[in-house]
Length: 153
Image 1: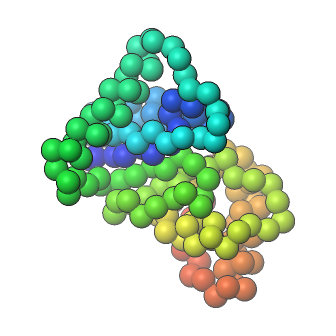
Image 2 (image 1 turned 90 degrees about the vertical axis):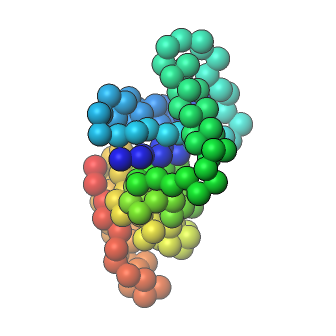
């Protein structure tokens, strides 16, 4: 299975740490052919280390770029997108949104739209899952959106 991870893997940020956590979690899976699109995360610094893990991350970025250069129609079986919901995209037949989420009493309608594009959503906090479920159900009723979003922690 060709799996694309999209996130700020080289960023010294919370989302960078979560991206590296996801990469580590699936790194040794024999059934996954792993690819990586590194995205910027605001004005956060980049990792300057020249160690095995950073070099491996950079090799995934290069592998991904070379695959797209060799075949403009290159595609993935699954994407895992580690970023805020408004940056999620329909990249593969299976799309997983991975976000820290926020604790709030309302969210942008675009987050609902993008969340409904995902097959699964991963968040790092049970409180955020609870808040998100309440908000998605409430807003989906108000905006008459389908209740397709599934949250897992």
